[in-house]
Length: 297
Image (cartoon, rainbow, N blue to C red; front, side, top):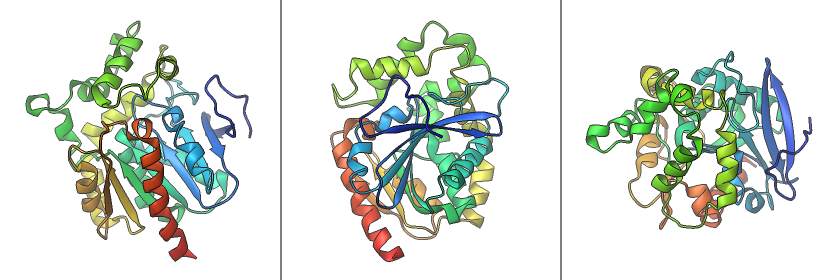
């Protein structure tokens, strides 16, 4: 159902709420024609990470972007389940509710694992899979948490039960600003107003449950993800989008796909591709989904 618009909104975007077994999911929609594209944010993000991409895609497609449970304007209740499978079932409920047929599914950053699980276990709901600067437990994500070999400390920190809630209170802005400085390479693309929006979304006693759940999957889901990739590899068209530094998205997706993914690199960006290079990313997406739609008839 349509929802009262939160503070962050865009012209042409409609806000909605969906109850999924007591979890209140917030999502937005834009566009009225064309095949559907569903966008899933990473960390420390919300649907607002796609604020510049949505208008570009919505010219020719129906576009949806969701706040995952525990993020943004969706429920943050500590009593809810934040294991990966719960996020997957939310996507199933959302795609069923949208009733628009199979979607082009785009996931970036830490959401790649749950999106892969959804696509592998619900292939009827996914027309194509697009991974942006992402990898999965069991396929390289653990190495990014190894601080002795160049990994980042925040992965283990966020994935340790209870620690984010205990340690971050009062320092939310410090952490979010650190993350955007560390992961971004394009100065000025994330404005002070954008940072205010993200900081607000990650402020409060229950604001970190979603983050903790997703990062915990780093250490709990490797075996399950490997087994799923062996038994149910992705058979829909797959696109890997990486920045200029290392093609870890392409490497990971090649290991979980039945065919060889299409690989694209976007130059002069950091990790936050949708926010740093929205025009380039939208162009890559449209160049990919067009032929997929033509083949599907």
